[in-house]
Image (cartoon, rainbow, N blue to C red):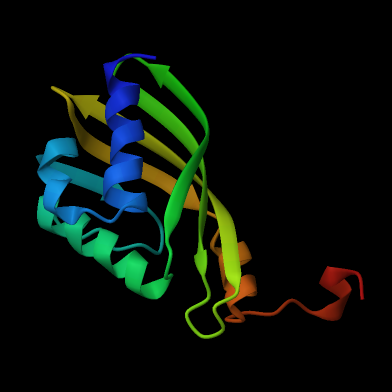
Length: 136
């Protein structure tokens, strides 16, 4: 893998799994932008740091595991399994995420993707499916 993939792998570990937001500027550009439905990334480096802290509060034990990574020059696509614990019950939860990142000059400048919020919300008890949808 190349330099862009290395930046993405390390950011997943340091910022998101370890929660070391003091190092955001090592991995993300000042003018960073994000596009995710239902997730407010805020603006620039402060937004990344705030979101990394918030996900750890909302989902204790938050961690990202890279299941698949595809690199094409400065573009990286990652399929992740995100895990943590239900903040009310402590039960483990996990869901998938697909993220597309653009890396320039050793920093992530753009990130967009989709998270399987339905799976997460079902595990957290936020939503339920009708019996017909679950086969019951």
